[in-house]
Image (cartoon, rainbow, N blue to C red; front, side, top):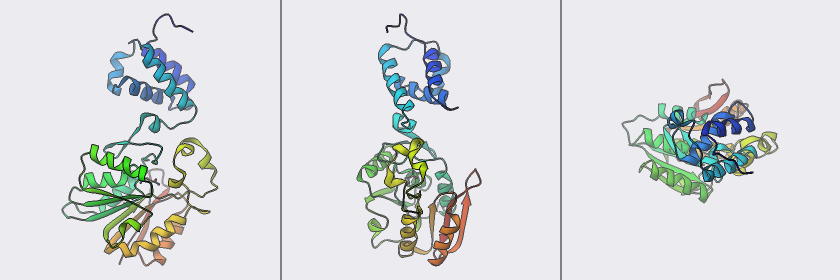
Length: 282
Ligand code: GLN
């Protein structure tokens, strides 16, 4: 069907918002259209009645259909804001979550700004944790690791774009890339979902890398390995911080205590759910 006149931005957005489910529909439609038009949100206010040319409309409709089919907005935009950083994300990386900013806050409380501390982020994905810590602590040396070479490439390109030169990257599982090294703080947002959890088949999770999400029958397979190996890679008094699911706090505190950690605790997120457990090597 040929439309006689180009649609105005506000007409296209209203139509798209009606097709996207949920309260976020209007906001998501705006993000996708602004992405196609290469504009910022602030631009929209004064341009709502501008006509949308045919190529832009076609590109927008393609993105809209992919969103209706379930693809996460962050993958469609290729970006996600985390902490103060604008990060590139691809389907090789988990999409950084706002909850993970709690882990960053807890880590920063344990990293005095005036010292050349050594920090590791295990399973860095897009680099979210490593880059947030590196940006807040320019004197720290941060090592970011991942199993996935593709994810590390995304993380390294994010470091370059954020002009952070105090992060290095190494490929491999958990402590393999840390061989022979000790750190003042190890942070990780590992996979922690039980392999048969139905949430893996819903929403954004369907499109994210399974290896970044699921970890054995109770979701704790990777966390057991991380806790068991941490002592050999922390200095005395060094901290281990682990993000996890809302119902895993007691089990992870028990693992930390069995491994000899002290000052073991769990911090809750804005929804008052257990989110990050931590302990200190004596
Ligand atoms: N550390 C990354 C993040 O917090 C990736 C975590 C993961 O892939 N499990 O977003």
